Amino acid sequence: MLIRNLPESYLHERDATPESLYQDRRAVLAGMIGAGLMPHLAQAADGEGGGLPRLSSRLTRRLDEDQTSYDSVTHYNNFYEFGTDKEDPARRAGKLRTRPWTVRVDGLVSKPQTIDIDRLIRLAPLEERVYRMRCVEGWSMVIPWVGFPLNALLKMVEPLGKARFVAFETLKDPGQMPGQRSSVLQWPYVEGLRLDEAMHPLTLLAVGLYGRVLPNQNGAPIRLVVPWKYGFKSIKSIVRIRLVDRQPPTSWNISAPQEYGFYSNVNPTVDHPRWSQARERRIGDWLPRATLPYNGYGAEVSQLYRGMNLKRYF
Image (cartoon, rainbow, N blue to C red; front, side, top):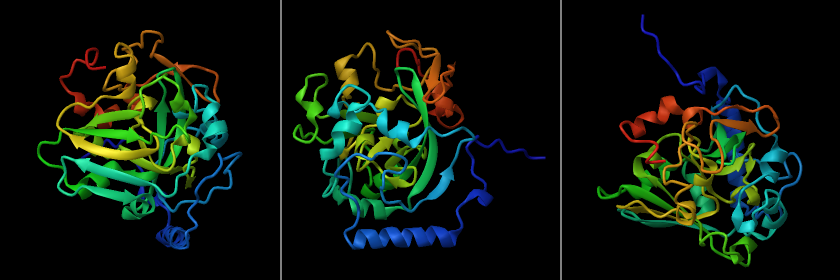
């Protein structure tokens, strides 16, 4: 008898949203876009839901774990463009203008494009994926993201054979992002992935969370989500994606290379110089828990690093 070992977040067909409801919700979203009603998010979201419009999506991944509260997810953030305190982004991100917004995709591709954010949202059916997220500082969350696989966008621009890495860049605008007036990091914030990491089906471009449009403090209007890596790899408020042939610089690796490696995979056996990575604290739960290799996604991503020295390539 053949026994299939499925990932713990595998979704059965019976769990999927009925197609009629899914299509109805997509029609509502299309109407909002056509009428120019997609939110500009002039202020940070407050409270459960925050009054933000819902996004049409289909649940494709879930976890049998309690989700972190919406209030915690939107009020306990690392987003240094708005300040270094966890509460700063929710207090200071309201001036960020997320419409109009374009994302430039270029570099070693056959079809470079500059894409308007609302057109980008329409390019691929949106999915809801519940992911664990782990911060290098030792805290973690479980968040239901709304977005689409990064590989859908990369396939559209057709990477050239020489492309080996993907570089990402955040908006640089100190007028809207007051944290960029400080020298805590070099601006703009930049990040990078190997091309096979970027093409992995777990890697998500998120435009919402909890079924709602992404709040400013969480990286509106579009951010990266790489759930098996520490949270700082999931760059926010993206304006450019570039395919390159060499490993690109990344902000925290530039700032403190002895503390923040390029790969930054969640690894309980490799400590940060100032913090143990063996345990974590889930926001909303004061009891520490053991950190899982690759944040619990090892069955799906560990083959990407077969044969690598994970203490050297941390």
